[in-house]
Image 1 (cartoon, rainbow over the protein chains, first blue to last red):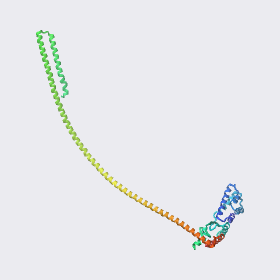
Image 2 (tube, helix red, strand yellow):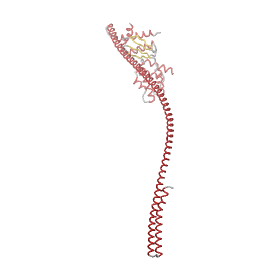
Image 3 (tube, helix red, strand yellow):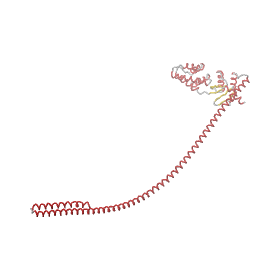
Image 4 (cartoon, rainbow over the protein chains, first blue to last red):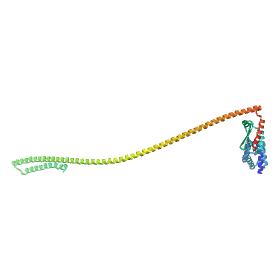
Length: 155
Length: 231
């Protein structure tokens, strides 16, 4: 049952592509956890107010798949604490681009990384026009510079 | 016998003589009135009485004169005695003075000798103290000189150390300034180079790199990253 819960939680990463997405999501999870102690706020309201509709629905569906009653403070607290523990230490790739990517292109890159490198990789996207074009990628403390800037300087 | 002891006796003698004459005269008067002589006889008697009175007066005068003489003699004798006494006293005094003087001289000599001895000791102590003091002074001076040299040495070391630190600090600050200037200069050069590259690329493509080209190049760079990280 616990393994199934974890699998359901990891499925949420389909909607969490970047490090920034994860930070927003984990802050929302903490708010939910706080609300379980006060019983003042509805959990679904907190999720809808702070997350995208897709992600909010995914969390509610995940809770239902894990047979969690979100009106029960104790089980809700246990479920969201598991989300927090599972997603807090996800692998991250730093990628520097010469332009500000659209959400669509960011999703495309993230999917590429999840397919080619690691299925749970989160992107930490930065922008630096000076690299002209291409990218600089940092993973596990190693930097790979495949930018035009480097190419030109090496020429 | 002293003059003071003789003097009362000398005074009493004339008085006693006058008293005896008076008694004798009363006696004759009494005899004459009590016996009832005849005028001739009475005259004779009176003459005799007068003669006796005169005689008695002369005798008493003589006695007084003798007594006075005697008193003078005694006084003279007493004076002589007094002079002798004074002379004796003078002699005794002289002897006492000489004795005293002699004693004083001896005492003075003794004191002088004692003084010499004490003075010698004092001088010796003073000499010894002076020598000790001089030795102590020399030691103190030597110590002060040594301390002064040490102080000067440590001060000199401190000054040189401070100078060295200051110099190092100045070198460091100058080095930092040079580095800042170099970084600033390099940053300017790099910026100019980038602008030149951008311009060259823009000239090459006749425009700036379009977004779709950027995305395509980015995806190509991911493939390149994958190739480089295969091993």
